[in-house]
Amino acid sequence: MNPRFRKLALGAIAIALTALAISSKASLRIRSDSSPSANPEAITSSQRTALATSMVAAQTPTQIEITGSGHTQADETGTLYNGNADLVLNGETHQVVVTVTLASPFTAAADGSQVASSSHVLDFGNGDTIKTSERLVISTSPNSDRPMLSAALAITSGTGVYANVHGSLTLSGSVNGEPQAADWNLNGTIAN
Image 1: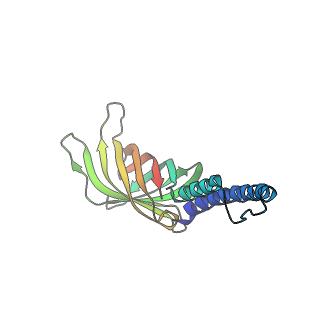
Image 2: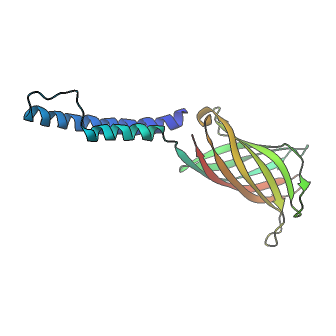
């Protein structure tokens, strides 16, 4: 479990253990008042349930919602796109460096769209990254004067606090200019 998710899990355990300690003291007072042979090591059924619930909660994957927008622009080769994004993870905004690498050039599809295989690296700094793999689609829309960009990003790996994440993200936006640049929105959910 990575450190950021571990911190959330440990907080839940600390709360449960505090509740257990308070409950144990009350239970021991009642038992020692009512029975001289009370076992101070025994815990009640409700205490065992609270402890088991907190342990399960600590092992349950933590889901984090991601939303945001960004801009990337092609380099002179047209296979590497660099840019920045403002991504919001559970209410906290992160300025992220984005690198998109085309694994294959854009080719025409039967429906008239252009498709390419690519990967994204979302670099949050301090060695924390999320890496994806996807199929980028550029298509025209009668409602827009700019070609539309879309992709379903599958998270393939991560580093740092995102070392064990998985999930998927949806990218939608538009393409403009030469060299190609894209403005896009991103949303989805990741879990550890």
